[in-house]
Length: 85
Image 1 (cartoon, one colour):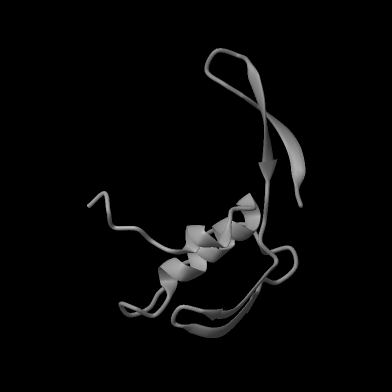
Image 2 (cartoon, rainbow, N blue to C red):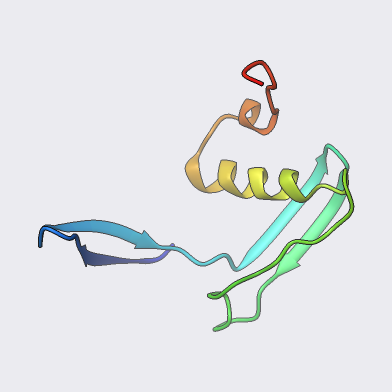
């Protein structure tokens, strides 16, 4: 899923991090998204990608789904709680 690289900190102590690039996103039946297939051209996965859409289109749902997939979170993490607001 990536290459392990050594990144120095301000104090000269290295920490290991993973460089991860999305190659494909497939989402089905998640909130306002019936189906989404998003594939990145090989060799061009890195860089900036912008997600645009109207309110309620599913932008945040897409980003949460990607986070849940990469971080192995439970599917309940896709539900937003407004209790702290």
